[in-house]
Structure formats: C-alpha cells, structure tokens
Length: 128
Image 1 (cartoon, rainbow, N blue to C red):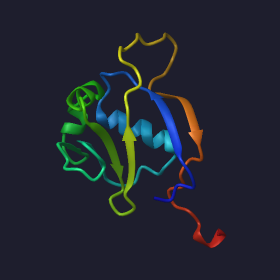
Image 2 (cartoon, helix red, strand yellow; image 1 turned 135 degrees about the vertical axis):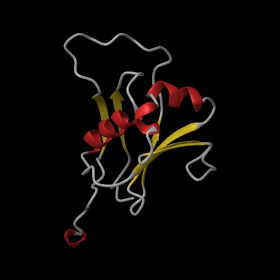
Image 3 (spheres, one colour; image 1 turned 180 degrees about the horizontal axis):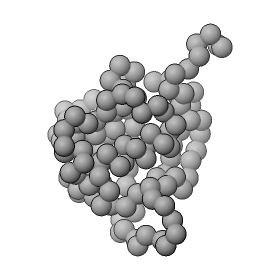
Image 4 (spheres, rainbow, N blue to C red; image 1 turned 60 degrees about the horizontal axis):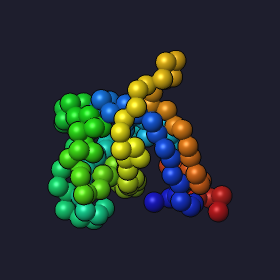
C-alpha cells in the first residue's frame, strides 16, 4: 500500500517450519511492527476466491507447515495478508523444486537476497 517501489525478498526457511514461523520471518524481513492480524491464503489471484485460508486466530497457523501450503497451492498462488486496515499483501513463491539440507551453523529462517526499496509500514506523511 505505501511501498515507494517494488520490493522483493528471498527468505530461506525449512519446509517443516509452520506458517507462524513464516509470518515471523516476513515481519523480520520487511521490518514491520508485528502488531496486526494476518492470514495466508491460496487463490488464483489476489482478488480471487480464497480456496484455502489460514487465519492467525486459528491453530491451523501453527499446525500447517510451509511445505503443506505450497503442496496445496499447486497451480495456484500463495498470498500473505498483514494488517486488514492497511491491507499489506505479499505474494509468496517457492524458488526451489527440491529442498536441500540445512547448513550447520546457519540460523533459519534467513534473508538471502533483497531487491528494491523496503515498504514503510507507518510513513510520515508530513515529510512529503
């Protein structure tokens, strides 16, 4: 919503991590305050009918793994919605066909690439 340009980020996260772990990784990557409700959903497009919905108020967030969501999304898209008032929407994609073993001494999840200008969650409108 308030992004000054396109921003993308590659997060390396084990497939057996939960959606709650993925939410936390996205929050850390974008540097937002983790102060609003969120959901993940699978649909044909961001405005399409939500085929599967994983809401933060439901235990499904901690019981569903990243691998399970992407397996359920075959042929569809995965979205992460944060803050229903400001409607921060992120489209998630899987970049590897095959998982690889975790590296010793590395803490996951971690950001391994980033492009563009990071969005500002609470911009100061008086500066413009």
